Image 1 (cartoon, each protein chain N blue to C red):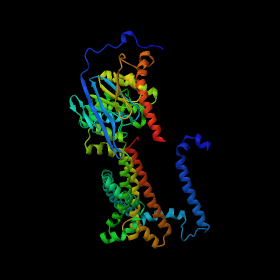
Image 2 (image 1 turned 120 degrees about the vertical axis):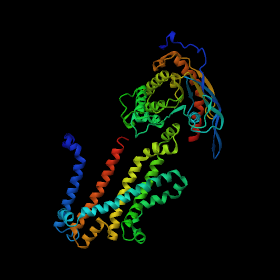
Image 3 (image 1 turned 90 degrees about the vertical axis):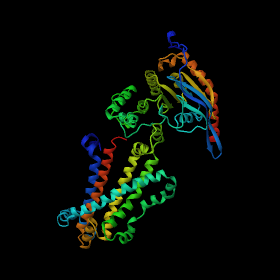
Image 4 (image 1 turned 30 degrees about the vertical axis):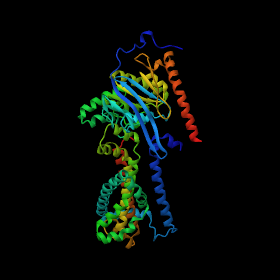
Length: 258
Length: 282
């Protein structure tokens, strides 16, 4: 520990290096358990084989073009989640009766397995991207709406009174004070909502065997290509992490100091 | 005690009374509660002249902040009228600039953008409003901090940003509700000096709500002392200390006498307030 404390490079990168070391150790442990047959190699592939399978799923299975299909669905869902969720949260904040009537079950929806409703959307939209997008939007909406509502409700009264003392119109009050003050909370909602949407896009793709990455995982699993299946799953996890980090950076860039 | 006031500094009685700007005329504010109406402010009258610095002091819960909100137009009046330059106040008025007790700077805007906010609302061109905002930032002594965000400033600096932002709108009346309440004593004294300096530079009319006797005596021409529940006028004390004033005067005998006089009036009210609070917590 004392070396870490002294060396400025180690001090700066210690959390990242520790995180990477934990993942590498985890992989090595699984590799060891599979190689010694403590873990069944027919169920859990060797991490080294999963790593090698990446090249195959990129070249043979066109994972990148499949990723673009999934990204287009997730992107459409993300835009809809923001376009519906933020106004919905604003509406709930502005109409107390509506808030009291719906807040609990909207919050409850965030914890519900929305994906189970897919047969209904299959009937409505057929086996199309819209079934996937509809479920993703439904899953992403609660956190965005609830955190928008929470952010707007938590705006400090002194800021609102300042706006009133400057005789702002309702429109000015919203855009110049309420919205920017609630932005950190809205961003948290968007970050969680978009991750929920992405999870559901891939999940529904998998269930209805339609779209980009979901059907690929399905096909690889049906072919019993375990290293390929796990490589595809790792790819999805990796994409989710990238989305989360990008959202976090975007928020910091938009709001340099809070 | 070291008397800091020199004989030539003794205030001369004004030749003419200042022209009245703010008139609070028999104002009462009642709040409807489940237990019946509660009178927060009862029949208060006060006239504030142009360029005058008047403080309203009273124990906690006496209705000072209610009166602040009534003058600022954030609350409606139950009885009586408040007029500024003859115009009745029925809501926030363009001639009144408000500074609040809590930090009211916009955390997402830099110091300069905070101060330029009212000018932006007026539709002033960017170059012009930034130039004017810079003037007010310098006036409150924050030159060099224009690009900083409020989170990077101390509590006292943030309160100065609020004051600069309010002054940038060029209000006829600067209305302040315990603006230094959250600050430590030393910062409070230095900020008091700053406010006095600004008030004299701009000949700004100020109505200050405070519970701090030293602050009220240091800054004001007159101090309205309120009773505890319902908030009525107990006395209006005339503070005839010479100007320009600074916090150096605090050690003078005259200053001490004024503080003692105000406290004598306030003590009974503060005791009532404390007894009430003790009864409430039993």
